[in-house]
Length: 147
Ligand SMILES: [Zn+2]
Image (tube, rainbow, N blue to C red; front, side, top):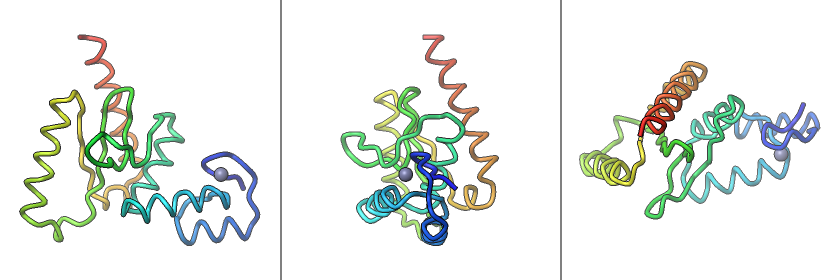
C-alpha cells in the first residue's frame, strides 16, 4: 500500500487509520496535512476524495486554493477552473445562495469559471464526476486556445 499523495509505502495500521478517518490511503505526514487543511478551512471530506481522484486522473488540482478573497475547495489553475463542493442543499440559507452567486460573478469577471458540485455526486458517482470535470477542463482549454 502506498500513500495517494507521495507514493511512499505505508504500513497496514496507517492504511487502516487513514482509510477510517479520511477514506483515502495516506502516509502519516499527509494524513496530518490533510486533517489540518480540513480543520483550517472546514473542507468537506468529499473535496478530499475528489481532489485525489482528479490528481490520479492527471488534472493537477490544488486543494483549498486562496484566490485572493476566499479559499476555493479545489482549483485547476491552468484552465482557471474553481470547484466548490456544496455540502447540503437543505442547509443553505438565502443569504448564502446569493453570496455564492455573487462570488461566482466576481471570479467569472477575473476569468475564472466556478462550478458547484453537490457532495452527493462525489459520494455516489466519483468516477462520473471526475469524467465530467475532465470534460469541462478540455472544453476550457479549447476556449483558451481559441482566444
Ligand atoms: Zn504521503
